[in-house]
Image (cartoon, rainbow, N blue to C red):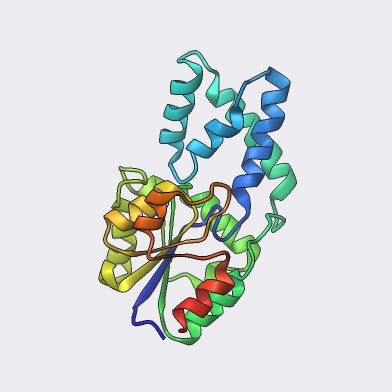
Length: 217
């Protein structure tokens, strides 16, 4: 087995197939209000906080873009479809969490999503009990790609970042983990890795079951 103390997970796109779920909501709104190229804008926002997402949207569509109103509509669509444990889970989540617990590894979450939503989604899926620490987007000042959220997760766990793996799907997440001197594992979701990601990630794998094999090797 690899020599490490902890694994820090991103949530959206790693544990839950939530990024596609959010984009599908934005696509509904884009059709309703004739917003062009919304998918590209959504992909640019993956792995960032709500504050940064708003900034990206206003940069793309102009300062008078009614982002807050649209976001409310998207949120309503999302909750109607996916609340109460209906959010699709990525392959291998329970497998990797059980594997880490069995081997006495520490487990944290570093998600740009706000804490209330994180806790609720993990609880509904039955995963909350596996996590030693949760660090969320409303608990740090600087968003990914800055390393703050991963460094805080390691600090809360009491582990050295370079003895910790970070599992991420987004470009900003991999940049963040690398900047914090963690060992980034990329499990791509919507956006496929480019040369930058291949240089920053320790390894790129297809799913969390492959991550278990890699860590156990």
